[in-house]
Length: 283
Image (cartoon, rainbow, N blue to C red; front, side):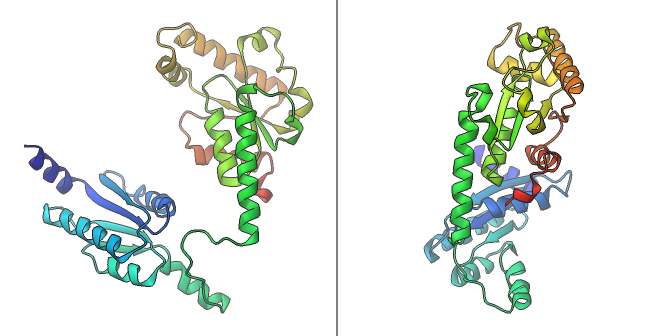
């Protein structure tokens, strides 16, 4: 029976391969953005990273052929394969081959009047190394300044995220660090702050760097119940109180904020970049 279930699932969901001689993250990110335009279509995602030999390319071709054999529609293949021989081999598979490198490299080569290096993964030039160093430094900064655990060094922050516990501050801080090399601290707003009707004492001098995250109380209660089931901390009543107080405090202090409930982390980060005018430092 399990075999039939598998064959059945293959025929119903369209199989998508993300093939790369690097991590496959670029292929997957770009591929997801394109597939998201097709609502109601189910996709079965298979990432195949580090395809850097013809033997490994052959494994990809066989896996694609197996999907077709099982009665599935031909798979969609998003590729960031740079090596010409490996690229050509996988291109000849039974999948719909979408080349995310050559599609853009050739017009760019023509426009710039120079050939690309055809190097696998990110180029390792000086600018890249400097950017990499900035990202590592920013990640370390975000981890050290997570949840208000370090009060010193806030003057080095590009942005300080504030909001109730579990409103999305930590993942947003790390995303800003990893993607953009931005030093983001984050600071929780807690019941003591609401009783005093004031920001935590470490923050007023950095008001221009503050950005708030809020969340729907119902969603907050769900998230907190995963961590501390049945606690007062996770109760809907308490979540409503904290969210209302936090939003009122941010309004009073003139802090820009948004609700993270229905937004992706990419949308949240982009809004923060625009609001605190960090766009010029991005990339």
